[in-house]
Length: 295
Image (cartoon, rainbow, N blue to C red):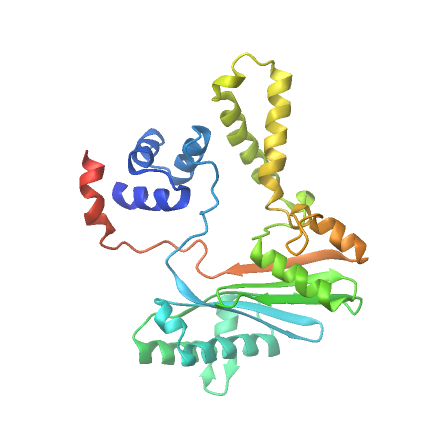
């Protein structure tokens, strides 16, 4: 179990709140990190969880497309230095090419696929041994389309964010722009209808506490409070939903309008950010803030 020091570090990085506030939040929530984030948001100390995706893991993502099949992969290394090495890039290419040419439903099946140098797991292990760093195929997904659909793909210049999207329609420029939108604006769902109910209800609970804790709303009737909460929910969830986001290349319209103007719609997409959700490793920061935590 992570120590209080480690939890304070992660909470501070995920919310931007100060040491003292993070410590108090964790103590008030029995050191439950997710509840502590909500506690800070409800108190107005952390206005959003925008930094929740920041992690220490390194590596590269990759998208390959051939015909009606695409594959997106994430391969991790321990350091960015290794991730920028040409041999590691070649390994990521090998992983993507192997998965594109074959079919696998699980990581175990993927690692068992044949390559020119043995199984895929053996190719990964060989470079891992040569560099002295742990390397893993963390995740992958096969994406398919019909003949009436088109793929859009985008890889950020640093190789750490990638997306493949399936659109109904046939305009290549639109497909590319939507893929870039998904990566650049961190879209998580196509629209509100595709968003899990528990995500919406969680946000409703957080926003309700935010509104109720605002002294300016103390004497407002419940129906007004309810409307305020719904308004805040819509605004908060807007950035998660692709079609509700402002269109990156023309903010005068949203993505839904841009798609409609081109006679297209989004069927599905997969977006990877390297290292998202992987626990960070502890470093010398612990010693540097020990005194602050004990105060």
